[in-house]
Image (tube, rainbow, N blue to C red; front, top):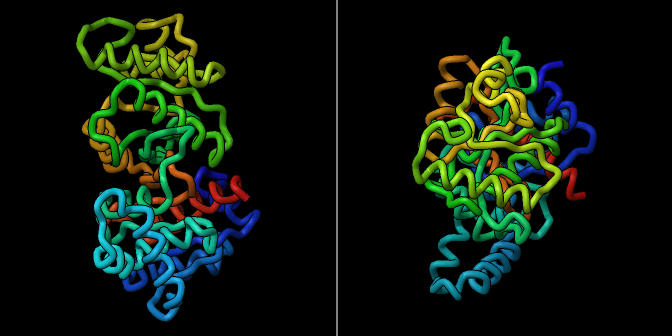
Length: 312
């Protein structure tokens, strides 16, 4: 069974309830039908009639209490909570649903703000970021063509400590959803000081921090991508690497590199790009590209459901 099939099968093992707030988006409506028909999850398509006015008022009050320290007033809180995206996020926070997926008609900043403001950032991971599950057809690299790419959607230019925690979140996603042992490569234009620069120093510092945070994790850097994923190249460029050219979690030095890379692989290699999956939050949720397909929505719901299973 391929990676996408495995993900959908895992989601079916224990049905979780996932909210889809973009109720009037045609792709979301079609995806909801497929999810229900295939038994991947229970779907709450958050149409206006599904929103309880008492819950709406209670969420407004809670949101105001959470955000007033940031200068939000009650009117702004009330207006914000009119967006089903925020209602879905608050339902997830409360546990009325197990997660939410949105982004077909909202921008990534919209979805990320709702997720951070309502769900909160995990104290253990300490930063919200994102990752894609990339499935490259007819590829022997990574985990039989499957990779985690991070961060591709949230943090513009992570510092070394943030990069370490982004790496940890991406590694845990690989283990939790895909079930494989993460082998993490911190990517660069340099392999083990073959070049110099501040960005390389940042990666060296991130590697040291990550080894301190997660001493058992298989991780190395800084690595050029060919030294990270091609064993023959790794043997030439860095034969002592613990990864041996078999990395399956690729961590990019900044958002430019991550976003460009995932889109290039998706389009040029005809890869499946599942995500961006938001990581580092207290509850599971996923963003979508506004150019997403119906199948992309189905797969993001499946991933969100699997992550929710681990919390229940």
